[in-house]
Amino acid sequence: MKLNAAIIYAELAKTYTVEMTGQEANAMVLGRPDFYMESDREFQSGHAVLATADRLPARPRIRHGAVLVCIGELPYARYYREHLCLITIKERADYFRVYQTLQKIYDRYDEWENTLYRDLAEDSGLAGILADSMAVFGRSLYLLDKSFRFLAATDSSVRDADWIPSRGGTLTTEAMSTFLSSSDLMTEKHGPLRITAGERNILCVNLYSRSDTYEGCLCIPLDQDDFSSRDESLAVFLAGILETAIRRNPAVINDETSSLRRVLQTLVEELPLSDAQRWVLNASNRKTQYVCVILQYTRERPQLPAEYICESFEELFPESAAFRSEPGIVCFVSIETLDSGKDGYYKAELNRRLRDFCGRMRVSAGISNEFRDLLDIRIYYLQAQSALENGRLMAPGGDLYYFASYALTDMIINALGGLPVQAYFPNGFQTLLEHDRSGGVSYLETLKVFLEENMSYTEAARKLYIHRSTLIDRIARIERELQMDLSDSDRRLQLEILLKAIDIEEMLKLR
Image (cartoon, rainbow, N blue to C red; front, side, top):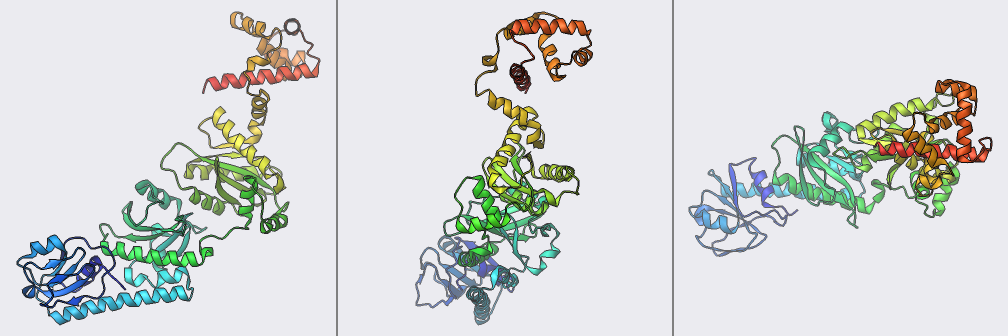
């Protein structure tokens, strides 16, 4: 296995007092070090050489990327530091014993590399690869997928309280929130990431597919101030092995091309179903009752990753499905897993779980009516979307918005067809508005209450705190101004919609 100067330095430091100075040499291109021969007047790029200080020339030719392991202090070390990476063993040491130590270092890493390639050949799985790597790192190792679900972890991981997975196998919300607040995890960044979460340093290397799509992350929690270039180099190498394993068998990450979740997403996005997906749909349809829930971020920061929210939602609600799709995160909840056996009682449990979930994930939710036929899924997706849009508009700052609470509002807004509400005023309606602005009696309020009380003069008069005969006179004047008979159900419906539209418009002006 090819190593680099950082690994050689870290391993030698276990036995000797060493110092590394000069140019960086991070590329893992170094084979086993050569003996320095006095006839050699040139240090080659990408090669490591072992020598004693008394045998080195003052001004040799040095190619960029060369590494020198020197026993003893060089009197002219400055020249070497300027041109190569210099690892100095500062104490007196036997030349051949140092050489043997270097051979053992390479033997150890060669054995690890051979073990990993055997794991790949035998398809030992991600957990096997991590288990065979733990001795090299001497620490817990974790592999998360793009949903921050634990794909694999070393046996000692359960002793690391901050990294115990939740019941569904994801990183806990508390750990995830701390993780992101300190790092704003960059899933597009290649190479090692140094992240500080609370009192913990975490070394991360992102994993990618052949098409450069983010697939997950190798995480190695370290002690405070315990980052080293050696760990970074080895983590990058191990991540490459894990990527190879994933590319050979993508199912270890996620294989849901024909799963119910994928079918639901395909139906929501109005895309054609494959034959396998049609089979899943036919086998699953009408078997349970669902509600559609659409989640959108609030304005708080930092935002948790959508994939993590999806995994956490499915963990919280059995037999649910959650996926990312515009305008947010779309979820389907089997309400029969919540129902206590009495009609409507599922809502109390749904509210309890959703309200806590929305608070922890910093999202708000729009919730559809119940449905059973998955072929109607698009309707209920639009209901949840409408509930969220109208709820945020009419009652900003909330967390749960049910379509049933905003169905009439949505119907009226759609009924206006994009025209201003004034376009639907009947003859004489403007006269009533002008009277209300200048007079002490509100004819619109009188009309509204009269219609709400099903044109009962007695009940409307009681609610308005006026005499019944007074109300009769007012309604008669309203009918004259509007040139309509309120006993006409169509005209009455027109007025009820118009009055509701005016209420909505006035409410929106206050937002």
